[in-house]
Length: 151
Image 1 (cartoon, one colour):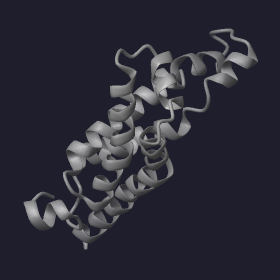
Image 2 (spheres, rainbow, N blue to C red; image 1 turned 135 degrees about the vertical axis):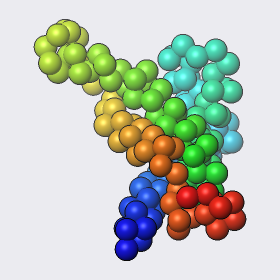
Image 3 (cartoon, rainbow, N blue to C red; image 1 turned 180 degrees about the vertical axis):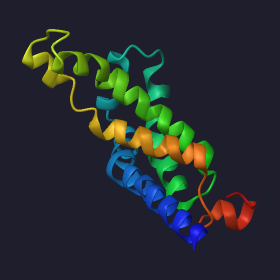
Image 4 (cartoon, helix red, strand yellow; image 1 turned 120 degrees about the vertical axis):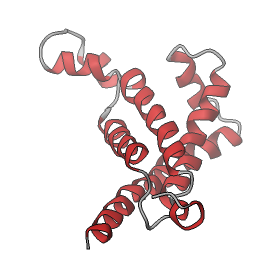
């Protein structure tokens, strides 16, 4: 029974990867493939060199990484890349530390600036889930367990 509960819990966590892929990654991949430069511009504003490369890396980490996590295939590696992408989104893209400092009164910024930072909550949630999966592995109900003997 203990293994069943653990496997179910890890499967439920892995399903966050499916939502990541479909709700976040697919839009970025299709926009980039269609020639849209909005996401690339956002990556460039964060200060990354070669913003096209980093935009594609982030989009693929979200889409392909999310699908791999959901299926439980190469789960630890996919979760590691996706967690890293979410850390960048939370801490750099959404200014998590600065936002926490503003909300606690340790830093003053205009309401317009803070609103422009967006909300880091989803990125932090994904960061925590995918970090846990990178540490714990996919569980027994995964393609990794079936084909690669990984638990």
